[in-house]
Length: 425
Image 1 (tube, helix red, strand yellow):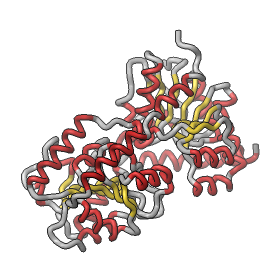
Image 2: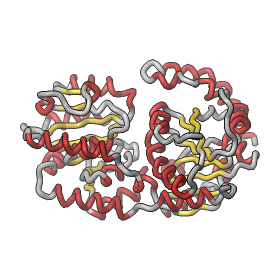
Image 3: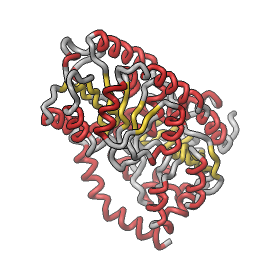
Image 4: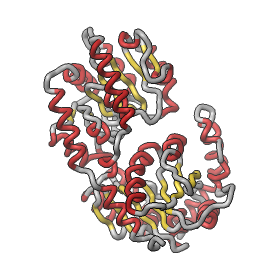
């Protein structure tokens, strides 16, 4: 109790700073300034009680949740959802999942008053939290209100488990508030159970069930064919993180001419301008994806770098590329989602740091869908060579087969979640 009281007091004191940060981020991403009162538990309109509440904090979790939402609707047609998010990209992606009767709001800040107001206002039938979102006040107040809770697509890396042990007095009761924890892997399940979770089941990874949009796949194929006709192979640097782009661009410049086209897609939209400046500083000619519609402009094939400054087009980028470098894996950040690349048939080169997706990385390597490089310069050299090598095509085929083999988590999780809801009328 003392740990939770201290945590809540700190959050109350930090609330003005939190709101100031939201307003600051809203300079570049205006959605952060919209409906800001929801962050404090203030909701307009007349909410409909009895919806299934699903929280997906950001873009990656929301895209994974799309597969779960599809499975839920297949198993229970007419199901109404309340979607909550924490980031602008997550909320934008979540809008595409809404049907008539659904609702979408910001998740409130984790102060006791705000979360109690959220629960009193919306009165969901059950709650589903995606992956790693553990908010102590929210979960404990939901438990106190008798709300069934599920942690879906749950994962917990050894590093996160170690950090959590320092705050065990706060986090163990929060994890124990979940009625069911649906883990991605057996290793995740063991770590979650050791950290206080109850009723842990291994269900697999929802990201294998993500289905790339056909229109994006078709457009990406058209781009790659046009670039191939112009004599350009394509290497994608996918979901890069801060600290990775500068050494990537230096390694790219060190390649002998003629180089492939580099398609560079930063993970966070607020860094697009920063990465564009890095491209210019590196002495490379860059074009921004946002400057054209469906078809690249004349002369685009002669650029050194295309900056992928768009949201929701990763399947397009993976399909346009001959090979991809996995962002977040070349700095000690744990790597980004590698499954989407496989589903699009894009061979992948990973760095040494893939602890966020350890099992998926190991399976991709074993299936021959990916390779691991010691560092960025080695990965850049290998990617440039692999982009035009005969071995690329069988590697692409193995990547698609690998992704298809591990599907099915969405249906299993949907069954487990719906079992907690009242029977459909």
